[in-house]
Image (cartoon, rainbow, N blue to C red; front, side, top):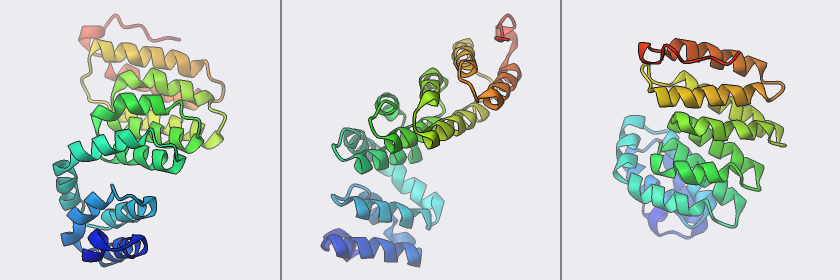
Length: 212
């Protein structure tokens, strides 16, 4: 842990990797703080190490530092180095930080495909229906893997919507379904979406019209 906090770049990287291999849960707090290390390789190694540890404890520590982490990584979405931006988008999704929704929506227009890729993943994890119309625009992304990931993130989001959602949320779903149908090659996603909308309808929105 001392090397992780005070070592040079290589020592911090080696320490993060070793702590992950050892699954040393007492190092979780130091590793969470190392997600903000000045060296991207240390950040990545720290996250990998955290994934190998007892997740209940890790989640508790992340919650403790959520505000600090979110401010740091929202700012890093503007970094000039795209791997830093993509890692920032990924972590914001992993910690499910809702204050990051607007910056992540902006990241869907990032010039680098992998930043858009992880921004879509993060937005899917955050589970807010109003982001769906923005995500669908990324289905026309020129990077094939990004299109696939956006589709998967949309599926994840809609499959994890609460049982009871508001009429406003259903309006976002309707708009999203319409946009999905405008994209060729998304027939399967369109059918899944339509089925979920039907399941989510309530008496309060019985006049809600599904686009055919």
